[in-house]
Length: 219
Image 1 (cartoon, one colour):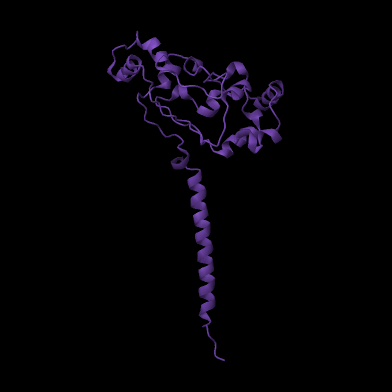
Image 2 (image 1 turned 120 degrees about the vertical axis):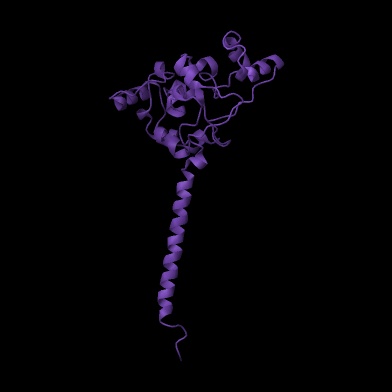
């Protein structure tokens, strides 16, 4: 019986298999890269707001404490978006007639809320509680970055699950004294691990089994 396939077909099959494997690996690399890219995570991406509120000016320049605007951050799962009255407390006296602040004045005058857009926006299937993080000594800048240096607010981190788990697995690397939670300029000391382990015990931070349980963040 004559040979059906030429001997060169073996080489063609090998080349085809190699090409398919290469394509699969390439597509996997593209997917892996895109998942961690700022295009998908929105990291460092500025969000257009009704007014481009400058944290660099209000926090870094004037020295406003985070809690002046985000009043519920220590007692609620939400940090809270300040009502227009909070803005008017100052801007009825300072820059009261500035054209760029007309949306604020209109909001107060018409009793309609400002339509701020969330910058650090987690998916609906992720549960995050600000209160417990503040109580356990997680600084604002740990998640939100140095907002006191941001003329325009942007998401400072990827906020992907692997980023959250890095902290949940080893919280001692990130914990700080509660008195320093709202200090934007705080820098971890040379003995951070030693300090973090002490604070972890003092603040009754749960163990890694609980901290990495799916139900902690997904409810």
